[in-house]
Length: 219
Image (spheres, one colour):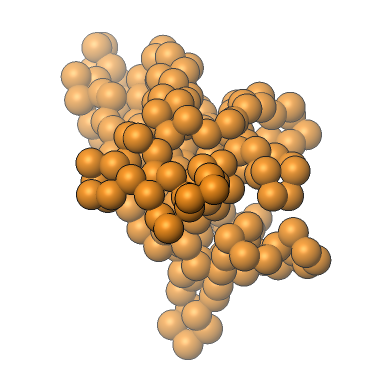
């Protein structure tokens, strides 16, 4: 039910791990359990926006991915990821999407990693999303761009499945808009740091992370 509510099912069965004995799926992203916290909820308009962050392990089969580009930290069947989810008033959801994009940009700027942003066309956007921005990190080792994050506005698609509503100023129930973004997929961030901070003396720790690491160089 949780996967159906967010649009992972029926769609991404081939990418998810199914525990047949319990008829359950391992979560592919924290978007699924976090967004489903609001299933069948009617919130007040004054409660909006509702912002939630989830830090979880994620499990993906990466079915159909083969070859040299899936090795190392490129594609992992289990990885940690920070997810940001927002429940928004329909009038503000695209402003919220822009805020989420700026939030992800600021993290990558502070890490001083080379990135670019793609606005996905209709053919590349998943059927759940109205608008998606993908963030890509440049891999100096592979000389190609790798997706590092994405931010999407689902408008009422997920809310309609979840029956997630809010009472507007007239006291009537109205479907909310939901948004989510990866902030960030941690293994590829680590790969980006290892690749882009190489020096003759070792790997330099990004300045913004030094206070958390307690050291500034990996020999």
